[in-house]
Image 1 (tube, rainbow, N blue to C red):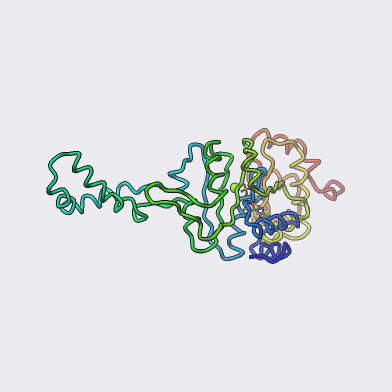
Image 2 (cartoon, rainbow, N blue to C red; image 1 turned 90 degrees about the vertical axis):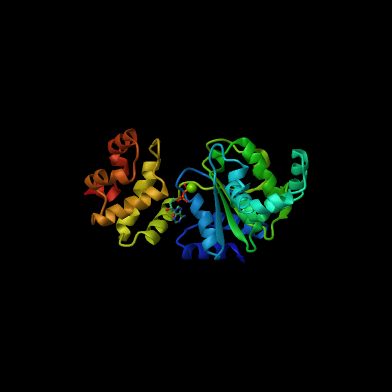
Amino acid sequence: MFSSYQEVQDRFDSQQYICNQETATVVYLASQMQRPLLVEGPAGVGKTDLAKVLASSQGLNLIRLQCYEGLDETKALYEWEYSKQILYTQILKDKIAETLQEVSTLSEAVERISTEEDAFFSERFLVARPLLKAILSDEITVLLIDEVDKSDPEFEAFLLEVLSDFQVSIPEIGTLKARQIPLVVLTSNNSRELSDALKRRCFYLYLDFPSTEQEAAILKKKVPGLDDRLLRQVAEALASMRKLDLKKPPSIGESLDWAKALVLLNADRLGPEIIRTTLPTLIKYPTDRERVLKDLGRILPREQEET
Ligand SMILES: Nc1ncnc2c1ncn2[C@@H]1O[C@H](COP(=O)(O)OP(=O)(O)O)[C@@H](O)[C@H]1O
Ligand SMILES: [Mg+2]
């Protein structure tokens, strides 16, 4: 467990994740106070990675639930392993016949079998999905509920129940209570509003595109071989591009690709030609490409314009 927000920053830094004081503080508080952390923001700003790094920086297991439309309890919590149950009944055919030896009617047979049904509805035949895995884990885990805005509102309501008391009732088995409360990170790209009830349960972090300094720090950490002058030019160019009202502004993932491409092509400064050739790593819509090329003057480093 972290002892301060500075420790969060340091440990994240050693996992190559740069975070500012605000992010480090909310991460620290959420882990200390055992509250789920809801992280919202545009795609590619480090929401998923935050959860991964929260786990790796403390040597904890990461359990990930990827949300999508139609996701339900059987994929998120548990389901019975039907094929294994069938297999066992096949193998135990003789034993079952023995149990039914003296009964004469169908309803008697059903009655008799029902006294044995516990054998087939035990943990042995249960497939634990991510939420149950986190509840059953003996160790503290990081539970990442990724892109929760893609799930249906009904699923969100169910999730709220799980997050409120970290226990689940399985009718055939009983109530299973979390042995360790997991550190929960939910992420959302904001494709729909999440319920107030869910938000009340969570601490909230809005991750936006990074500041120029923060982006430069990320690039410096993750792209070896990028010299300091180019690094600064790249970070500033990215900031200018994000002001252009593009359909898909470059994310951090894309800016890392761009910087790596510039290193591979031995660029030492940003000029119109190198920007044009490397845009496919960065810009993913024809209209955005046009826009960037049209506004190159705003993106090129100032010293470039002077020369
Ligand atoms: N603050 C950061 N420090 C270092 N790398 C980062 C940071 N934020 C994002 N990244 C990198 O950017 C990429 C996209 O991040 P990701 O977590 O997948 O974004 P999101 O989940 O918000 O869409 C990943 O390669 C991640 O490592
Ligand atoms: Mg993500």
